[in-house]
Image 1 (cartoon, rainbow, N blue to C red):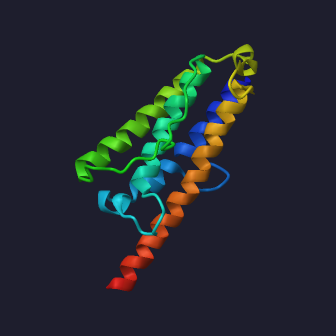
Image 2: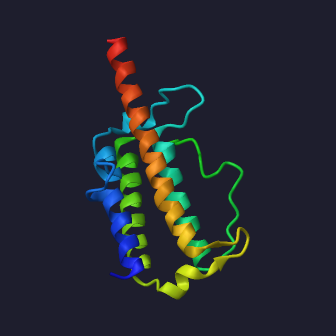
Image 3: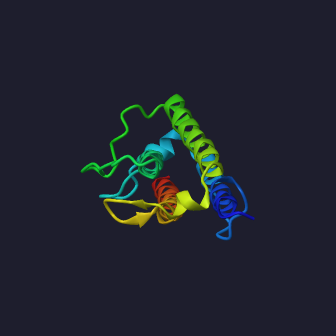
Length: 160
């Protein structure tokens, strides 16, 4: 198996497969309503929806960096308040995440070993490290999403 195929496997398993951590991004988000995703259940914490948009934005930024574009991280680190919290908007956000997943898998399918070893100049990380970083980033935020969802459920049960 080629290295890019192993990376694709890790990426797909975390998103909608059978990862070692036993939870996936897609199945976790599929259980949430727009209201749950938009709820700020902990003070000074991001909402699930804000985190999902953050994941999408970082996936785009990292892919552009691998393509050789110097992408600066904005001051808000791709975290922005969600204005439209409708059911339709949540479905559109999930579709954007699905599209980013599909685009990444296709992108990774075209990467070769030489591409993986190239460096991204500002941080001197290799493309391989950037790709592993986006997988780690997704896993990190999946954990946050699960904790926020559990806290939201606890808060709703306490209020009732």
